[in-house]
Image 1 (cartoon, rainbow, N blue to C red):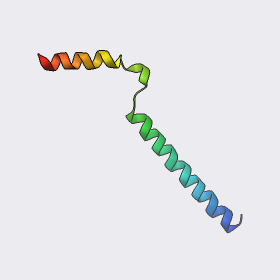
Image 2 (image 1 turned 90 degrees about the vertical axis):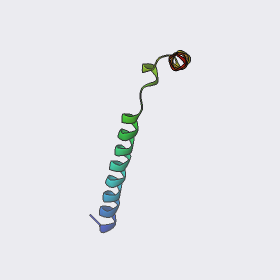
Image 3 (image 1 turned 180 degrees about the horizontal axis):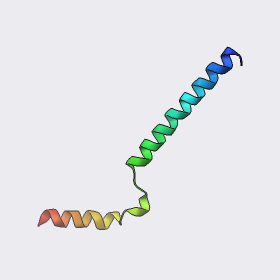
Image 4 (image 1 turned 180 degrees about the vertical axis):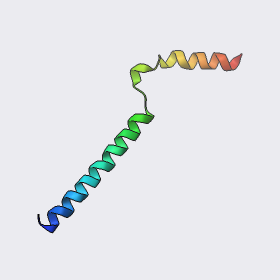
Length: 52
């Protein structure tokens, strides 16, 4: 391989590893929207419990 191709391949692999790490980190910190209850119901329950 030529030197330029080796440098390009190394940078491409590094870029893909960074992108994979970032996407894994974001997916670990967020939850699936369907797993949460209804937002209005949660807010009203939280407000009622704090008022008591």
